[in-house]
Length: 337
Image (cartoon, rainbow, N blue to C red; front, side):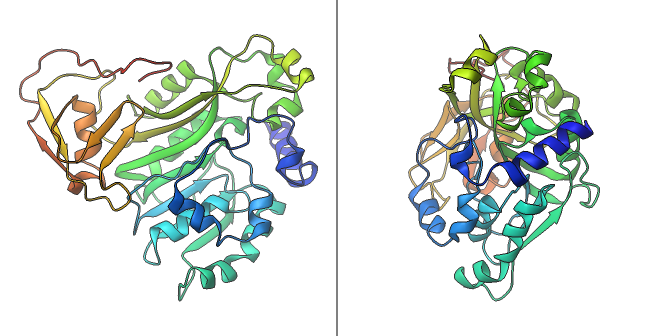
C-alpha cells in the first residue's frame, strides 16, 4: 500500500507537469460542461487549471449554501468551481496527499476569494488521505465529490466507509471515476504507469456495487457513462481485453434504500424550482423529470428526490403502504442500477 501511495504522489507531484504529460485520456475530461460552469472557469487562475487531472464533471446541482468535501482535490479546480456555486454562505474543503498540488491550491485562496466577490474565504485545503477522514465529524457534509481519484486508492472499502460516515442523512456522494467491465489482473495493478494513469487501480463495476453495499448504500445511479478509447500502443498491449469506462455516479445516504427498485405506486412531479434546471431535472441517465409532468417512480427514486436537498423541489404522492412488486427502473443500457 505504501509503495503504491508514494508512487502516485510522485507521479502527480513530480512526473506530471500538466495534462499534456498524460499517456492516456482516462484522466482527461471529454465533452462540454454547462455554460454557467464555463463562465466560472473563466474566473479561475490558469495555474490551477494547468495541472488539473479528472475524468468527468462531478458538480451536482442545487448546492447553494451546502457543505462539500472534495476528495483528492489536487490544485483545487473543482473546489473553486464549487466555491462559487455554493456561495459565500456555503463551504468547500479539499483533501489531497500531494504537497505540490496543495501548494498551488493554497496560494490562490486569497485571489479567488476576491475574484468571486466574497468578503472571506469559503474554502479550505488540508493534507490527508481519503481512506482516513478522521478530522471530519460524523454526519457533517451535505455532499462529497471526487474527480477520478478513488481509483488511485489502495483501500477503497475504507474510502466509501468514510464517505458514508461523514455524510449527513440525506447527503449525497457525487463523483466521477474510471471503472472496468472485468477485474484487473495483478500485472496491471502493479504497473506504476497504468496505476498513475487511472487504469491499474480501477474497480470492476460489480465489485464497486458490493463495496457500496458494505458501506450501507444499496442502490446507486449512473449519471453519465462513456467507454474510454485507449490510443497509446504500449498501454493498449498491456490492457489487453479489459474494457474501461469513465462514469459519473451519484448515491445518497438514506436508510430506506432497497437493493432493487420496488413499486409502491408513487408519483413524482418536479416543480421547476431549481434555478439551473427550470424546464426539467435529470436525476440520472434514465430519469428526466419534466417540469409539471407527473411521473411514476420506484420507492428508491421517491426517497432520493423527497428526503434529500431536492425535497422542496418535488411533490411526491403516495407512500410505501402497498407494494406492487418490482419496478422496471432500468431504462436499458450498460451497468445500470
